[in-house]
Image (cartoon, rainbow, N blue to C red; front, top):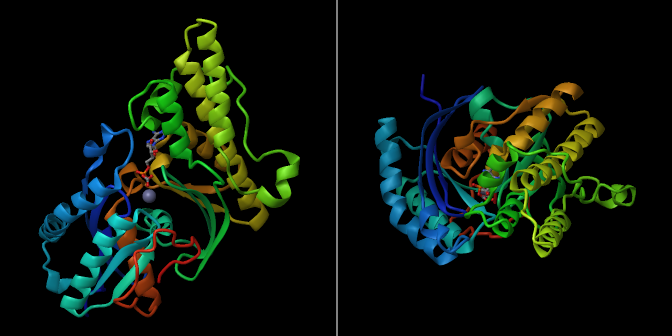
Length: 352
Ligand code: KG4
Ligand code: ZN
């Protein structure tokens, strides 16, 4: 019997060069290897990702990362049956390096190329962990760049965007609050750690877009910039009064506000659409306050919660190879060799 198709996945939307190999069996996706090189350390001193540095780092890391992935899986390029690559959304320079590499490989090997959506990849990666998705799932994708709620009837042909952030993504809000609290970049994990020591009910911070008037147009959208401003005002007022800032309580109350809004809206959407499986993905799903509240509320609502292990939640090649495997399994036509790097790729577009 011939082996199931071997999909090489390449991810370069931000600062991680991810390369992975996934075998697309008819009834499951099998991860053979997942390798990643990150340029995060080169950005940390600037307090944010510098696109030019990220693009150059991808260029330098691409070939060695591919070689490392092939070596660890004990295969050669000639065993690859398809190449999947992040076509967007993301930083255009970074995406260009990945798509150019993927096109060259697919062309040289004479195998199909699939340009796929990064955000949907954050959901698709869960198929590598607990098996292929049931008919209908809800996916909450939260990271430094995106906070989106997706109703997924089919991970390849039926992704519907129910809502997104209107301003800052969840991780971005954490990083901005981290900066105003004087924490190192990225602030998210530092706030998480501090929050574990604090009282989440100490300060009642606002819950964006949860008022009755927002239910019609923005029931499933998120907004964290008002919350961020509320934290800034609260901290400034204490500083002006010469008081110490209770970092743990501020962090815990802020983190609770974010987790509360994300989980309340997501579970309301699951109920409204009769969905009983929730997948949470993206770098911000590392957040312990979100994980705890999601676990509690899903259990209470009878919803099965699937959060992949942390290494598959941050940007990686496995998520792109997993989505590529789903596309191959469905037999969709390949992408053209002229696909662009689409920095604003719409969330309902799975492949281009
Ligand atoms: O997915 P990711 O690695 O990169 C993007 O695609 O944005 O997500 C990184 C984001 C950063 O904003 C980081 O501060 C945040 O996720 N983050 C966290 C935690 N771990 C990472 N935020 C809160 N708590 C955490 N434990
Ligand atoms: Zn991401």
